[in-house]
Amino acid sequence: MAKNNNLGDFLKGIADKFRSKLGTADTINPQNFEDKIDAVYDAAAQKAYDDFWDTFQKNGSRTDYQYAFSSPGWINDNFKPKYNIVSWFGSSACMFRGSGISGSLKEILQNLGITLSFIQGPGRAYGAADIFSWTQFTELPVIDLSLANGENCLFRTFSACTKLHTIEKLIMPDSCPSYGTQTFETDYSLKNIDFGGTIKYTLSFQWNPLTADSMKNIFDHLDTAEYGETRTITVKTGTKTAYDEKYGDWDAKAAEFAAHSWTFALV
Image (cartoon, rainbow, N blue to C red; front, side, top):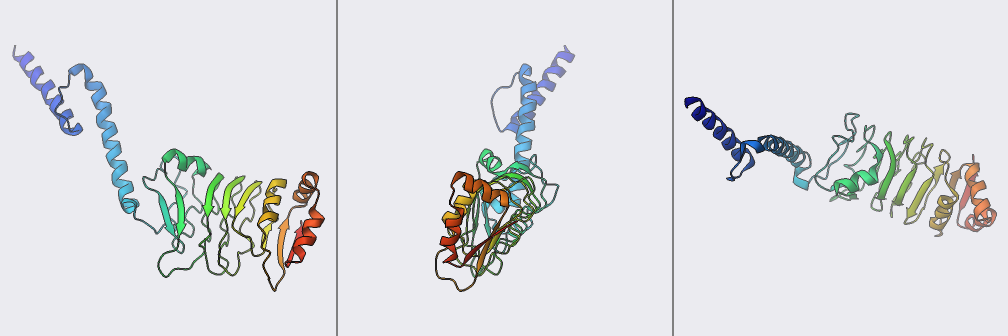
């Protein structure tokens, strides 16, 4: 009889522990203990997740993400931001540089239910240097860099992304003196890119096997305002060939934009 009483007390003690950990007053039957162990584990994991990301992202108020995810120790399994990533230009450089996160960043963010955006902080006027350089992403979502500023404001923003094949949309800076020719350096897989805003300065796509549609998009977004210096778009010969096969008016486009200080170099 004593053993039965001890066992009953023991089981009641376990049930009380479950109630305490789970924050409930409900009756818990011994046959449900296994499920409750899983629930306690999940609750502990959720608390650890909340504690880490609340601190890391300052409860959603963090705006300084310079080098934030740049370590190769950041991989898909631990990149689980809780809040939208909103970063100031000038505090965004090298945000993902060399990260171990791979695959489509667009899909990763969608699955997490968060967004990535960039803003200008008070008194700040900086560019978007190295934000995505040396990463393993295959696809990027809409990247709005319209507020980026400063000399060479797109310096190596997407360089050495050898697996990157698609940028859903890149919204170009509204006001800056130059971009930097290494924006897409050694992106050997980049085929699909859609621009927003206006392309105002020299850009090189010499490493990128752009499709005919991507080249058409470039033509559609070239600046036609008065400009005193020659600006150059460099593309692969294969891109020109693909464009001419589909649209057939490369020479006409080149002549049209020559009147607006643009030249086109082939490699």
